[in-house]
Length: 411
Image 1 (cartoon, rainbow, N blue to C red):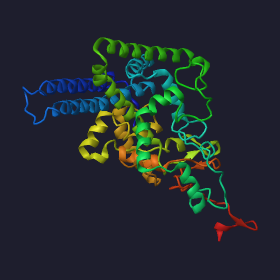
Image 2 (image 1 turned 30 degrees about the vertical axis):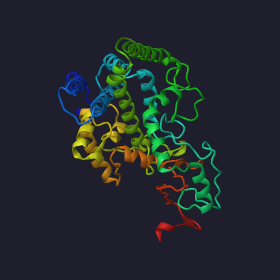
Image 3 (image 1 turned 90 degrees about the horizontal axis):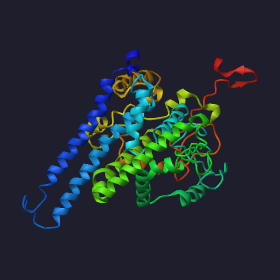
Image 4 (image 1 turned 60 degrees about the horizontal axis):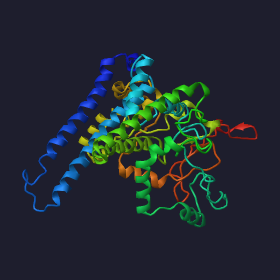
């Protein structure tokens, strides 16, 4: 890749991206308040009085959706600051990242530290920091029985299928509610109690405790600075509620904030979770394998080309160029598109295609329903579904097979 792909020296371009996000959010707010003034009997004549609050609810729901989508773009810019991809200056990176992430209730340095570990050990069963699969034993499932099922998940007896389904099976409603709860509460749950995080960490591990197992002693001060940012955020939200009232703050800030959390979980969950993606234990893990154990997806691509373009534009292509981001996290988002094209061409030569289905609720439902657990044994594992079946299996090559000392491949 050309060296220019790695350049983050253009502060004007970097600040322009985050400024544009703020301008769009401001425009959405102005449009919503302008239209809200017309939802009155004096301005429009609706057949039923109940339709006025319904119209107002619809308007502000759209405001929350679109504001949350573009505010996710600000989240992505802060994320790039943590990767030192915003500027060549660490001071600028950490200052901008701390301000933007604190404004969204994120402990900037604390998450930056664990996120760096995630990049170093993506898909590593005991070193990755998030979206770590639960194993059969961790879920308390019946022990593996080789007489009734294949360890690779290609053959499972009806008896074992029934046992697993009784323990893991979801109705469509149950799967929908489970996925919805994951999207809305998954992000704060990860920060506060390490939900979906590394299973070897002790109970009570969180991103706010500077003594947590995920942090080194020299990172104590950085965690405290992150906590101060979140404390300022809590004071700001609480003070706004006291001054302007809960419903105004809820409508203008908290609903978009929940959408940001939703988009963050949806995007990252689908990037790292799919029946076709492997996870590795130490003997088989390498950085290239981990970096390529992820998928590019078109955010909102299942809603048509226009929505796909808006989704990519609003979130700076974080979903569409994610494989490249794991191969080299210091490439700024505005160079990631061209760099991703170059990477895809190179991977295609090796027969590797890492494009997943479009990112949206339907795909979250499918992945949530199909990815239930991995086995406790095996150095390369794939998710199994609620029947114990795996959609993918490691390709085992044996080039050393022989008979009486004679190399088989020579005959």
